[in-house]
Length: 358
Length: 238
Image (cartoon, rainbow over all chains, first blue to last red):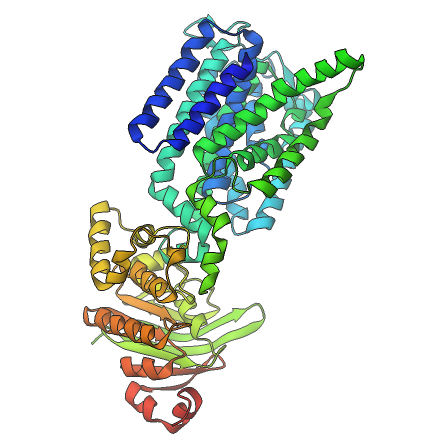
């Protein structure tokens, strides 16, 4: 069942990439939205929509990281830190921890703002760094943030985290134990993230990012404020994962530091690489594929193997092997990703051209 | 005529190495000034310091009467100093039009940018033919035209050009210099860094010769072109 939804969504994405006619694209988007909104009434169960809601959160995260890495070309290996900040915002402000029970809906915005603030805070001192050095610093940041949450036991519950988070309500109606509200909110979140991404890409800021990604010096010559543009990329990208974090925490009703480790950052980067960095539709496909592999395919293979051989294997230990294999395979056979952006494709297939008369 | 750019006692270092040791130069409104000198003399460094791309250790740079020494590169660009960098540095994966649009980044109005792109395309008909092509597919001469065109979109009062003839065929160099003459006639003040001293002095009003980060000689272009020492060192002797 889960595969039906994933297949429809991915097929629609591929169709959007293939069609060049605006109206055709818009039609597919509307049909897909209608399908995702209505089909759950007839088809599927809570387990399926739980996975789909998680997948939707990951799509949001990937779209956020895509702004930083894909658009502005800043390799961020600590993106999970902002996810953690979003989740802990909900965990601390909507739970018995401090007796604060701020509403879920307000916290979506508060978490987005907080994550953006921390994005800018991380960005400000590090954006003079380039390439590998920036990656190392962001990697460190991604390690430090969960450590802080782990060690501020008094406020964050330490290694155990915070449990029994508030169940959100919608005009007085509690979400209860159903996952459907999260599924629908996450769909709205994706729609919003897609809309923002698309508009940013076509905006002045988007063009500044593209210029910076290509040639920072030439971008400065063109009168682009490079530092401020990079800072904006970090802040906007982080805000997406702040929202994702609130959704994730509310659905799980739990936050703990081990949920936001390095593997999450790697997972999201893998989604971008797999789908095609910089291309919005490609990123959606990449994140859907990896989440389905993670949350549906692997557990199923796991139980098949277990029943067949009467073992109790835990294939989740193989996740890293699988990401690694995917990354290596993509780098070898399709370095631009499954559905690459025009620029990225040009970059990797015509890299020789620029050198001809340089 | 009034002084547009005034550089006094400019000192720039790369780490511990002194690249410019106290340079004085000025450019008057409407002039073409050539900076000559061997590799490593400090020509490119001078331009980059003026554009705010390098930290200035000591000295003062003023443009149209206001100090730009501590300003950021983008702010300096917005004040009206255009810089065509060495090696052209066009955005190779973007189309010619996208490159030109980025030249108008600081201009808020789309209409205005579109109009100025049309003006630049009138100066460079070759770019017009290639408007939808990716810049990486252009020839060296066309890329140089694009780099100059991109700088012109912002209508700079002062245009800094770093080695526009580098690596180009003589015929193409002649075309580029013809265009520079034309741009100058339309009222843009030009500072030209060139290895091709003969062509540069033929175009310029005045020139400075840099040696080891200092101004070794400053005179009118005609006088420099006749000076036996300059001829021997930079014009290949005659």
